[in-house]
Length: 221
Picture 1: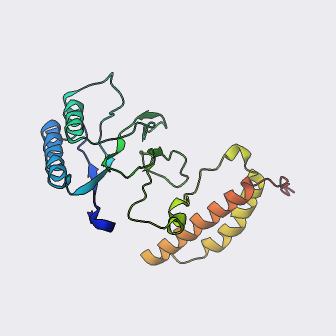
Picture 2: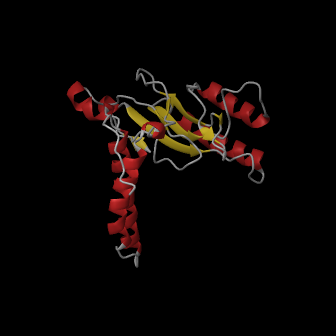
Picture 3: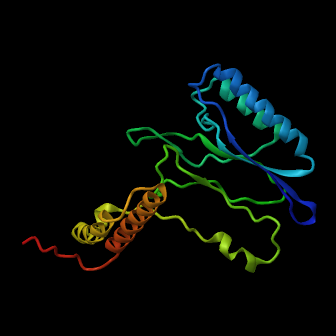
């Protein structure tokens, strides 16, 4: 995607997914994808800033495990002058173990100074086996007042359940769930609405119970 910036400082944004090691003809497909990416970079690097983000399916920070896929990728990065950060593991095994850093931002940003890549490993609603990554750049904006909303972090952090008042959480969710059980589920729109409401009251209940308040004493009689 091309973004038109101020003073003709334009930007090419590319979202990338490189073939995994388990795909058929994986090395040739991997090479072909990088070759296509190389053509794009060579075409635009003299006239645009370049920003590439995505799953590279190789850990560029693990120098102990080299293979021809990673070697080909690293040669592409070096020859095109792309920069990147190693900031932490982003891929998570089924058992919850963080095992490798596969997700990156590759960039040629000239005078633009990006922040370091951030691995967002505490996102409560993330159901992927990859942690999201984030990087901030200020681009085409001259008034600092216009940047305030860009620096606001709107993600929902994971709750520390050992700090949550579980009895209060159960009481709140039980009360809310009674109304949910009576809602119709005959159409996709109705099901979507129910899921959104369930997500909302579970999140609100956890936030309430994780705050620094006296613990709730449930009536167990």
